[in-house]
Image 1 (tube, rainbow, N blue to C red):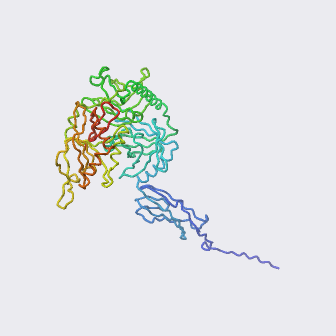
Image 2 (cartoon, helix red, strand yellow; image 1 turned 120 degrees about the horizontal axis):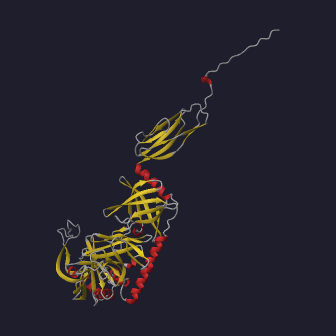
Image 3 (cartoon, one colour; image 1 turned 45 degrees about the vertical axis):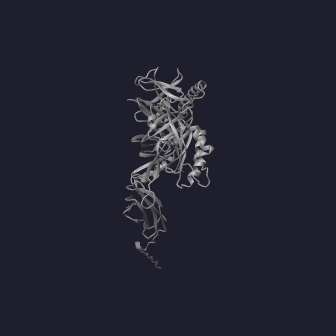
Amino acid sequence: MIVASVLLFISCSKDDAVKVEAQSIQISKTSLELMVGSKETLTATVNPKNVTNKTFKWVSSDEKILSVNAKGEVTALAVGKADVTVSTANGVTSTCRINVVSENAYKSKELQKTLASSEFGWQFKSEIDNGIGEYRLLELKFSDSAVVTVRSESTKLNEGTYKIKLDEDKIVIELSTNAGFVEPRIILDPKEVAGPVVPMDLVVKTIEKDKITLTFTQSGLTRSIELTKLTKEIDFSKQNAIRAKMGTIRSKMLKDFILKNPNCKPYLTLCITKGIGDASVEKPVKAGFFYSSMTATADIAYSYKNTYAKQCGMLVFTEKGFVSGISMQFGSKFISKFKYNETKDRFEVDEDGIEGHFEIFALPQYEVKGVVDEFMNDYSLWMRNFFPEELLNIKKRVSNSSFVDETKLKVIDTYIVTKYNRREPIIGDDGEWAVDEQTKKYDYQETELLGDGMLFCFESYYQFFYYFVPFKVIKIGEDRVRFERNGETQCNTRNKAHAPIMKNAYDNNKVMNDFIDQICNKEGFLLVKSKEKNSFDFDFRFINHPDRWFIARNQ
């Protein structure tokens, strides 16, 4: 028997193999924000992993905004939005939505994250004034909700807000908080005598991981500010100790003064005894401070050789004394730094070649003599900022009460006027009030002379409608005046029928007459003139009661 063995050879071609198709593909990021000029590489993961054809195709929906190469590398070209889509050979896709922003827009968002991510906040270091060489240190904590918390040697906590914004090609941090806690240089706003609380625009210069450099410009002066990331809270204990010491010294000085001068308001005054002009211990050069704010800020006023200055600035406490945020100029010399003298238990000037210290006086030592003649020469002075509160309250009651129900007229502004002419509005050909082409305000003509007195206006700015109390202005010195009632009151209203009604009502109203009697006192006033930009104030201080005074501003 013969057994035959047969070998069977089966040949299979490559095309006949089973293909594994992609069921899904997942891109590494489904959304992304890039700044113009930056690159990002996207990756894709296919399912199942043993897919036969592992080649991908990358496509941009708008190649003007961004491009993508075969490796998934995306390049941001222009501001806008576009999609990058990756697809498999069998058409399965996945997409990433990309927002391309400008370089500054991108950096501003990253800055927001950087500021808010610091556990202990940032040290804010600002030079106090040009060339002083001292710095204001603050601790700032920025939250995600646009709130900033400020700590300094003068306050434990002060909240404000912040906003990161783009201003043309600049990134700006707008910081809105009490200006006294943040910025040492404060310029008084003519509309707000007490000083402004305004946003600061801090321009971002450089951004690093732990340090941000900013610049701030005010009144033509640009200063550098540093924000440095903190690893622990700032210890203000030494600065606080100096500040407390100053408070103790000031309190003792005030107490000693009040015991000797119970009817006078005390003023803290810097007495320079050497190094400026002919200053000596016997005849010091003086600069007056309003003592009540001598904690974190101070109103500084002084005169030197017929020049006058009045400003509001920070007092920055250091480990040896304090620095005034405003330099006081005496000729070619400047004073801003003060040190504590332990032996004499007082604060003294800390400037080379200059000696001086603080004392207390009954009146501020910065009066400008010979202002009465100016005041009596055709002035209209807007009365505001009355002290003490009792005098202010009378003024408010005058302003807020109409006294006569049928007219509904209320006092808007109050003026002290000298050589005053009544104003009448000019009526145009159309029967309406004429408007001055240059000022864009209602035009007027001056009629009969009303003279000196007080003008209670029912309409702001134009002084057309008023209740007028005539005064006799009596000069009792180069810088002192007294007022006496002098003649019949007058009233002028838009509705002429209301004029006699208003006149009678105001003539017989106790609140109005109490206020006028306060101004027409027998003792009179000391006049202090202070310059404010293109305007100026007259301080009217009751001669026998220096704690009572009011400010009148020219308009």
